Each structure stands twice: as C-alpha cells, then as structure tokens.
Image 1: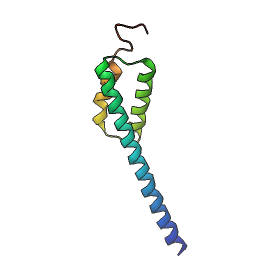
Image 2: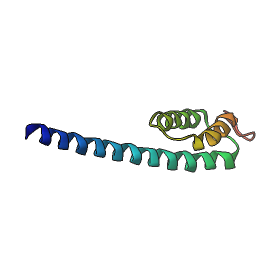
Image 3: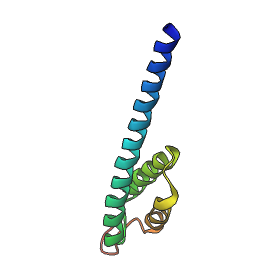
Image 4: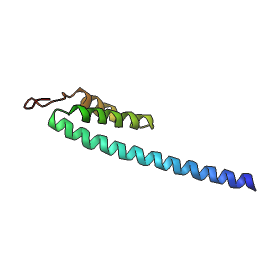
Length: 88
C-alpha cells in the first residue's frame, strides 16, 4: 500500500517536472526568437544583451532544446556589438 502511494507520488512529480521543463523550453525559445529577430533587424547587439542571449541559449540547449535555435544563435553571436552610428 505504501509502495503504491509512493510510486503514484513519484509519477506525479515526474509529470510535473516534465511540464515545468517543457514550459521553460517554450518560454526560452520564444525569448530567443523575439530578441534574436530584434538584433538581426538592428544589425548589432549590445555586449550585455549578447551575453544574456548566449546564457538563455545555453539554458535552452541544456534543457534539451533541439537544434532549431542554433542557427539563430550563431547569427546573433556574429553580430557586431555596436552600431556604426554610436560609440560603444
């Protein structure tokens, strides 16, 4: 009886954990796309924003996000860190 209750609880926790993981992946992916498109349009990215973008990508990838964001990440990381019309 105790083993059955424990097993049911473990299954519930695993399901909740997977739901949290999937939700986090979804949020990270949306943010990577939103900010990545913004930086690509601007054709530059501030150094602090590039660092934040990279950390979000690393978290996304670490949670098991697939490789579809890799191309966008690479493009953002290759952008210059200043606009030609501004000082860094």
